[in-house]
Image (cartoon, rainbow, N blue to C red):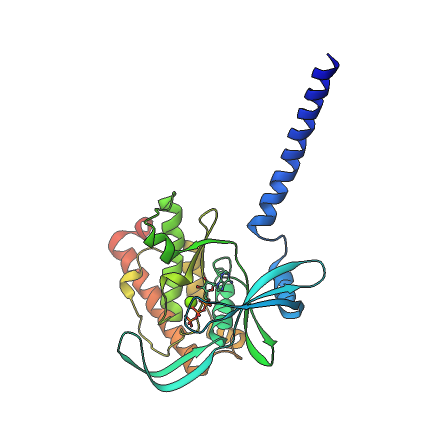
Amino acid sequence: MHELLRSWTRLFFVVLLASVVTPLAARAAEDTPLTKDQIKHFLQTAEVIKSKESSKGVTHPWRLTLSDGTITHDASFQAVDEHKSEMKLESGKVEFGFVDTYRYNIAAYQIAELLGLDDMLPVYVERRWQGKVGSLSWWLPVKMDDADRVAQKIEPPDKDKWNKQMYRVRVFDELVYDTDANLTNVLIGEDWTVWRIDFSRAFRTSKDLRTPKNLVKCDRQLFDKLKALNDDELAERTKRYLTKPEVKGVMARRDKIVAAFQALIAEKGEREVLY
Ligand SMILES: Nc1ncnc2c1ncn2[C@@H]1O[C@H](COP(=O)(O)OP(=O)(O)OP(=O)(O)O)[C@@H](O)[C@H]1O
Ligand SMILES: [Mg+2]
């Protein structure tokens, strides 16, 4: 009798412990309880305690481990800052006025904040490390990138949720005119959250859209924020990272994105276009 009671008591405590510990562990693995401002502060001030050069990508950013004594978290440091009047691309084409710079990562994050898309990007700040200034981004809890997903032919479990996230990515890609918007820059979390990273080859001064056919549907809140985007505010928020012609390019493309969706709404009706 005693033996049975003891094993029941033990079972009770095991179940109790599991119900308390599991949600905590899940939350910690998901990411962090820090606010965006606390993350920015951490990235700007925490000490670098470990570093490793990345093997993926072209410019090999560094994966750093930072600690402020309480929190330890990784971050990606990208210091590329290349400007060339002519650049032969991997595709064989030549790009005039080629720029590859960490500054665009920070500009993209600033714009994402203005548009309410900052949950779609890691926080990017400017930071000096080992004598170089670069962008530093909060390391995301990534399960795979979209290139891996496509290669392994894995379908997202919730197509609707996936599409709604990808429409936001597409709109943002058109706005920032990323010439290197490839699948390794779309990262996927455990619960199929989608993040967009790496804008170092974006912000061309083109006043045209790059791939207007990618504009199919638009998040309603994003559409409102796009319409409300103001050039003074944009210039102010990005003044250390974008030139005047680059800001003008963003505003001109904003106008074209809004016009494209308005035309789609006129043709198909709002319910088919906005969600
Ligand atoms: N914040 C982050 N969280 C998780 N993984 C990241 C993060 N930043 C970068 N990575 C990983 O590191 C890889 C390389 O980083 P990134 O895309 O910024 O540079 P890159 O591809 O070398 O740049 P470029 O395309 O200009 O050569 C990404 O594809 C991604 O797998
Ligand atoms: Mg990349």
